[in-house]
Image 1 (cartoon, rainbow, N blue to C red):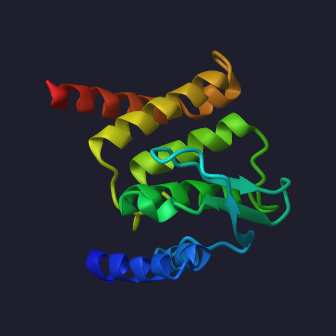
Image 2 (cartoon, helix red, strand yellow):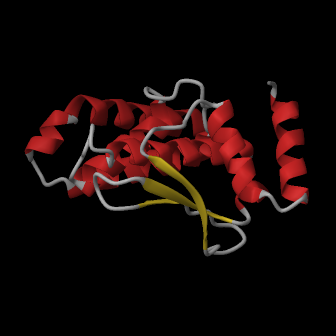
Length: 173
């Protein structure tokens, strides 16, 4: 299905107020579903220009992804990357993966948004969002603790993120 068809279908869902069904449609279209996914629910909207999704549930239990009702007012590429981020959290909190450290979970999810290693079918973000989410990734990396085992585990990936950010800065010049 091409971008125009996707957007047409999403607009139809949006017009009839079927936002949760639209989100389900996208995770099926982009093969993001997981056995540990319990479904979507609504969360409060932050503000008109801001978007926040969360994966809610205890570690080792089924996860609900909470989305704002205005999710589809945002750019489709951004929405797909945000959904992929949360669906990775769904996997990370499953009994088979069980990543206990929140900083590690966030690092992996932001890294995914930059490089799409788990979900290669997700489109690449604009340079603006690559920079924004790259900086978020580095924030969570720093929270792992200076010289910690986790930082050592992800040291090579950190270099990739820093290189991406450097390239984006040089591109702006």
